[in-house]
Image (cartoon, rainbow, N blue to C red):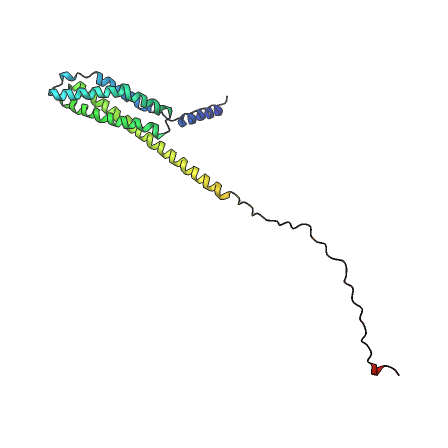
Length: 205
């Protein structure tokens, strides 16, 4: 294979790879794994906060872990099966958005009450999740734009096809009255002209 052929093959492979849409799990899973690992490493019972604050934070971390283990896997599987459909991907974004709000509350409490290493760990998980959420949101916007462009092209194609379609020819109605009558070839005979009668007084003597 020549150098040019090798470059052409590489370019084609790159183009095909670029056309394959990213899966939502490819975008979100690293951040979700980080969040799960961070929540499991927190020792909230030793945070310097009132008991009700520690209890609320523990409830939040339990809710996060439940969402990561039970809700998101099914949503991600559905989105991965149809990564170019907004209806399949958007539920993941909506869930991540709610998850982010809960993690933000945990992070705010950690900044005030947790040991520095735990506070930094939660802040890092929050930042990573925010970045992944933004990327997923951009993916949804791109999907919407692509679908809109395809709809516009399809509408234009339909309109063009309707414009160039030839009109149906006008129907001609033929009335059949039977065979035409032949023209008459018989000439009417002229009546003989009768000379007028001679008056009596003009008769010869």
